[in-house]
Image (cartoon, rainbow, N blue to C red; front, side):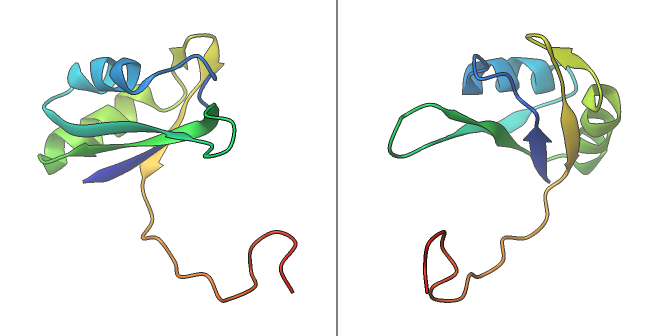
Length: 92
């Protein structure tokens, strides 16, 4: 199951996510999303857990919890939607 993790402190790393979610089960992938231009965290990330039961436990256990001074927003990730051409910021 793919899990969205929002409201991350800019200090949180992918390893921090892996460690936090690892307490609930096996983490396949943990990834903090980084800005391409600045190389800094965008304040959110995704965690992939193969076991549905463990993933649901992680969502319930970590949503609203504190990680490095910020309360996490944790939920099942929604499928990525296609953007139409020109939908980028400043596009026409």
